[in-house]
Length: 455
Image (cartoon, rainbow, N blue to C red; front, side, top):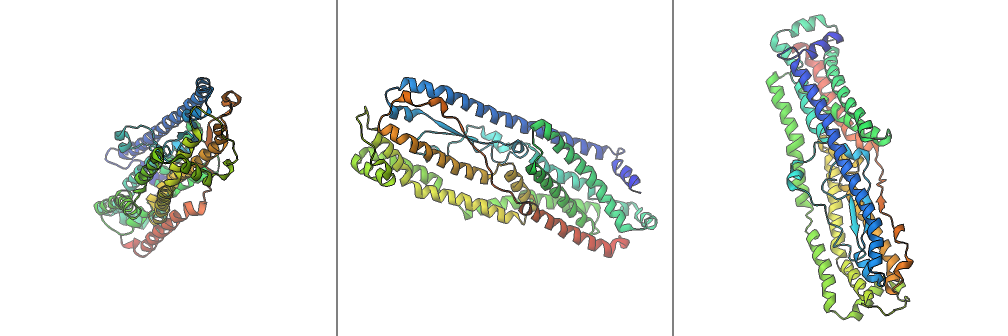
């Protein structure tokens, strides 16, 4: 029976199964294309990292040779780079990595004027987005699931063959389950082929992150099959089922995410982004017309350990200049804290609401597992801030004493790398999906048990 049902499924369609096979080939083709899109993105990221490593290794000695007598002037120009590590999984779910820079280069001057710099990107490309694997999974897999299951029983009823099936089948409910399982097995096979190809194509390691990523993808496919199973149990016509399922697809993937985005944007506005930049610039530029002694006193209040550093004669008062830069950050600290707090609130609210919207939950979790979401960017910004502070504390004494430039091993300053080690809980990732799968499967199964012989 299962073999015959499988053959019938593969031959379904107007032209002896052309529709079914074309759909599967299309999905597999787009899935493979998505791997190459991810690979190209990963290669661009790797090239950017290689370029900044090469630049830092060549620029530091060159700048040191040009400004060999003035440590303060040299540090004015030197940029120290931090890389947000790009995992192989990131190529499967690019997320916000195409908007947020993966390489942050900062001087030891005021941080708030540098931290929000982004790469120059064609806005038309950003509008279109990337056809990565997460797009194929979240948007295209459900469409094929709907196409394969919307008339799984109603077509038999409309063709007048359901009574024959009911007579010949000993367990009609089990037979219906077999019809869904055949389609589920075929689409899971396509999913596994795409993920399997990603391992050698993208160099994805066989670790726990990939396992959880795959489990989330399978759970998402199972969720859509459970929805289709429930709709099939409502005993509607094929046309009604198709409209209902497409309406659910539009609601879960377009309408609800847009509504959630508008709510979160209105609930947690971030005007502090502009306010932070203005406060930082004002805090710096006002110091040109402020008494230098007052600026130095405020700087020593922030860093009392530098009070004992001896003051030496320099071509320019770099102690005052870098104190001015530091106070620019200090005076914009409140706005910067509010900005980061609002962004964190947006991230937390998105995750909380997404638990009740499986499509949105899947997108966020795939981005988190691939380290390409907002949470990763916030952690990267915090790490960049700590790195910047470490560089300041290291070089301030050398600037204030005008230490010999030649005495510093400039080639030893390597590009720093941020490796995001935030834990991922399988329960938090898979729990909401499993609950919705159980809900719709239970509703459909219960309704089928009560009405299947009257379909």
